[in-house]
Amino acid sequence: MNTWIMLITSLPTENATARMRAWRGLKASGAAVLRDGVYLMPERDACRATFETIASDLLAAGGTAMVLRVEEPEAGAFPPLFDRGEDYALLVANIARAKDGMTADSAPEILKQARKLRKTLNGISDTDFFPGEARRQAEAALQDLELTASRSLSPDEPHATEGTIPRLAREGYQGRTWATRKRLWVDRMASAWLIQHFIDPNARFIWLDEPRACPNEALGFDFDGAAFTHVAGRVTFEVLAASFGLEADRGIARLAAMVHFLDAGGVPVAEAPGVAAVLAGLRAAAADDDQLLTDAGRVFDGLYKNFQQESSDE
Image (cartoon, rainbow, N blue to C red; front, top):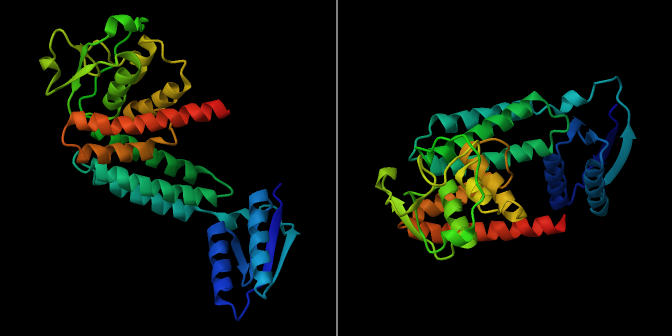
C-alpha cells in the first residue's frame, strides 16, 4: 500500500526569485497539484527531501510551508494523478518520426537525436513513480532506434559462424598485417584498438574496399571468411578477446558488452548511445581510417580506464 506526503504552501508575495525557484522545483519533481498551493508525492526518501528543501527555501523567503504525511481517501485514488502516459506517447511518436526519416547518410544525425530523446526519456522516468507498459514501450522503441542507427553505419556485417573459439598464443601474432573493411564502425574500431593495445603492438592495418581484396598474408577481421569474425553469437571484438585470453580483464569485458550491443543488439548498455554518437562524429570528421582509429582509440582508452576503475571500486 502506498503512503503519501503533501506540501501545503503559500508563496512569498514580494520575492519573485523564490516563487520562481519553488515553481521550477515543483515542476521538475513530478509532484501532483491537488489545488493551488497543495502538492502531492509518494512517501519516498527522495520525494520527501525535495518537498523539505522547497519548504525550507520558502520559509526563508517569507512564505509558509508544511510537509505532512497523508492517507488516500480511498485505495488507488492517488496513483492516476501521476500517470505519464501522454508524455511517453509523445516521446514514442518523436522516436517513430526519427526512425521513419533515417537513411544511411542521416544515421549520424539520428544518433544525435536519439541522445536527446534518451535525455527526455530519463527525465520522464525520473518522475514516473508508478512505471508500467507505457514506459516499457518507450524504452524498447528508443533502444530500437539507437541500434538501427548504429547498424546503418556499418552495412554488410559478417554472418556469424558456428563452432568454438580456440585459444591462441600472442607470440605467434606479432608484427603482423591486419585487414578489415574500410569506413570503420564500432566493432572494427574497437577490434583494431584491441589488437594494437593487447595483442600486437606493432600491428600494421590495411583498410579494404572489399573483403576479396584481402592479401593472403594479412590477418582479416570482421568480414565473412576472415581469420577473426563473428562466432556463435559473439561479435569480432569478443572473439578476439576470447582467442587471446583477455576476457578476464574487467575493462575489456565491459567494452565487449557495449560493442556487442551496438553491433548486434541484446542487453542494453548505459554508455552505448553516447559513445555511438561520439564515434559517429569522429567518423564524419576523420580524413581517413588511420586518423579515425587514432581518434577513436582515445575514446576506447578512456572507457577502458574508467571501466577498470569502476570495477576496482566495487
